[in-house]
Length: 160
Image (tube, rainbow, N blue to C red; front, top):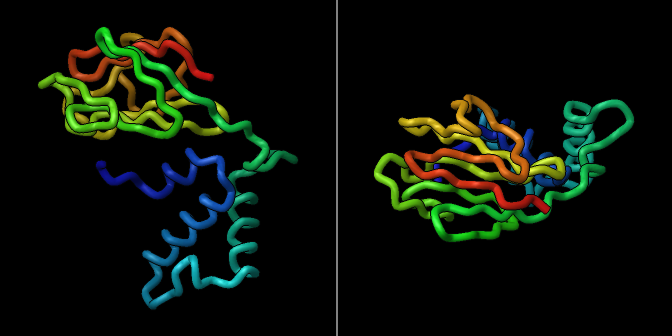
């Protein structure tokens, strides 16, 4: 899969521990000296990272963990229907394989976040289109949306 920026993962995730770990790993990668892995960090420091992530991402009195988890997504590509429960890529070599020479290997990322499903172009040559408009950032999906990847149209059948 094409590498994603850590901050996209941070924004898209609803799991506070995952967010804290992702932020810590980014800090560790940018730090000039050696730092222990997340597994070797003490409970107090992990608690501090969770608090920092909540402070940055939380709004008002709500916290990140209050968002309901996204259910599955059902999409139709051609005459085949597919159900996914976790993030996936669509493209010539993605989890949703498209036999389309105009699609990139890993063309678009479909990802659950904050109780909804989103799609994002992964830097493809031909772009990803949602309901006839080219996307330049992650977009929330709903039933009936049409995502054009290469020349293939993927239709959202349902998001539960």
